[in-house]
Image (cartoon, rainbow, N blue to C red):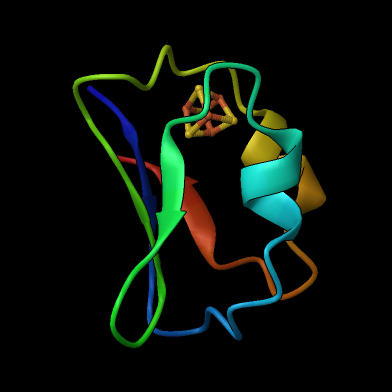
Amino acid sequence: MAHKISDACISCGACADACPVGAIDPGDTTYVVNPDACIDCGACEEACPTGAITAE
Ligand code: SF4
């Protein structure tokens, strides 16, 4: 399991800064969570200003 970023992402980068394991990187249209690195801590979910991140 990993957290996932939806189309509501505005690519602000707040989640990437909040992630303790560096699992989030900029993608083509939205930021993207690397499911192999994500430890499901939820820090990005709280950091996101648009509520674009949810647990899968
Ligand atoms: Fe990173 Fe935690 Fe979000 Fe996973 S749930 S992407 S480890 S901040």
